[in-house]
Image 1 (cartoon, helix red, strand yellow):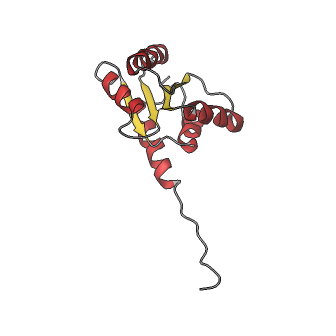
Image 2 (image 1 turned 180 degrees about the vertical axis):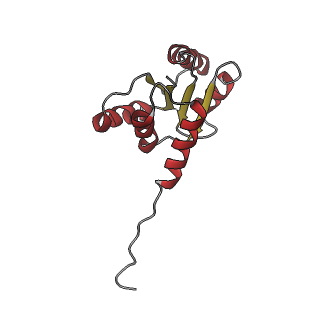
Length: 134
């Protein structure tokens, strides 16, 4: 099964995983590794490396990252040189739910990446009501 790693500045990744579990049940082969305030980047890299090693059972790992260019992203980008991972930035609850509900033993990593990223794009809606006084 494709593994899933959630990474973020602070507890966001843990909270998204917990919120997803409230809606869809606990996900198999999914971990959250938050960058703690003041944490040394090398120590964080080792925690992420250990999680990737644990999650990759041969089908690769999808890594959801909170924001492009931050320490979690840079860490995962560096580790991608030697690991079978796909990285998606802009992590949100829809993405985590999609991976929880749609992923199974026969899922291919590239198909999941496309499905999750398309679903995230399609899920963005701007709903506004004009001011009644105009």
